[in-house]
Image 1 (spheres, rainbow, N blue to C red):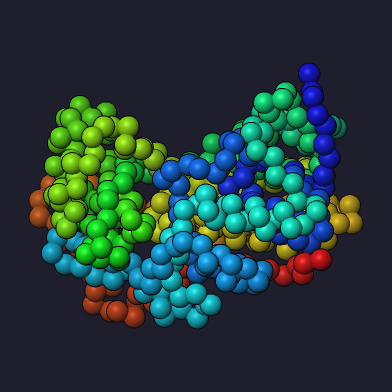
Image 2: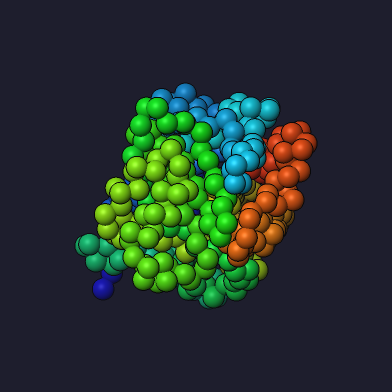
Length: 406
């Protein structure tokens, strides 16, 4: 039995970066929007916490940059990697022509809470927490809304447009029967924390060693660490015991060698199952998927959040007028995919190349490790670091806010 029925011009499933940014942009343009988020808050650990220059540019165009950067964050102007004893710069963001020439590391819950507070400044923005989308509402072959489970019972939201921004395990895309193209990945990632000391460096570091890859991201008073493992090998690693895992961490973390003992239990280690996929069609009548719901990205480059936000900006730019005037058609929705499909494909193509030619090779390596060709070229021709900085920091076809606020 439905306990509540609401209506809006747009209903968004998922209160992640894509959903919250789209909600803000639509409300800012005077479109009524309801965002449904299944959790009671944004506090989930080991989510993507990188805000790239392309996203910071969007925040600047909204006039919110100073307020965002007043929140605790770390500025990262370059990314380095270490192969054996060789350390090299992968990307130098200081060469970009954007407003911010760095990647900002900020807890995703802080970023999402910031977007929420900005959205609440507009009377047409509504966020419902603990509203888990469970089904689509359909009439005459068209999606006309969402059904969600809440602590108070079932909620129905009727809308001219339903947007699936509910991540790589999207209920919306599953219920809509949209076809997914899977590309696979040779690795998964184990995420955990190690404490940070004032004498430590602040630069993020990726360490490539024989058969192992280890990432350390500066997060203020701790390091967010990623231990890259072959796909599906977690059971084998756990069977060898936590002490063996701590020993591997100590060997790879070098300056934090004495902190591996902080890992006292496997519960401190979270598994990120890496997948790369893409919808063949992002939309059907009345429904559009964006962000991870449309294209799950590899963690390589940390670009998933920023690609999702670019989707949100493009969606707002293209659909605000049809939503305002009640003229929205499926062709309008296909225009979003036409706009965002090429940058998605190009980004995934590079990620798949890196997975197959670098990640897989390192994880399979049995002897002495030498840097793969792409990294040898970066070391030999430093100007290539500007190209990689643009691909990681800005991406293909960056979006800009075209719709003025009311």
